[in-house]
Image (cartoon, rainbow, N blue to C red; front, top):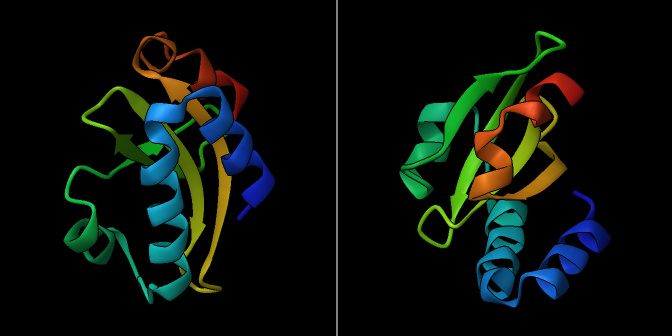
Length: 99
C-alpha cells in the first residue's frame, strides 16, 4: 500500500480523508482471500479487468463520489493503490487504458 499516495489523495479531497484512513486500517487487519471476502466489508467493491488484462478492485468512496482503484494480490495479502479518482474521472474509463 502506498500510504503517501493515500495521504496525498486525502489532502486533495478532504471529504474522503476519514474513509481513506479507515480503509488503510481495515486492509492492514484483513485476511481477504478473494472478492467475496472483500465484499463482506465493502459490499460495493467490484473487480474490473483493465487494458493490460489484469484485474483490479474498485472501491466506492464516500457514496460513489470517488473511486479507489487497487491491485490486490490475495496470495501475498498485498494491496497496491493505483488510482484515486473522482466519479467524473472514473466514468471516462481512460484509467483502464493506463493500467
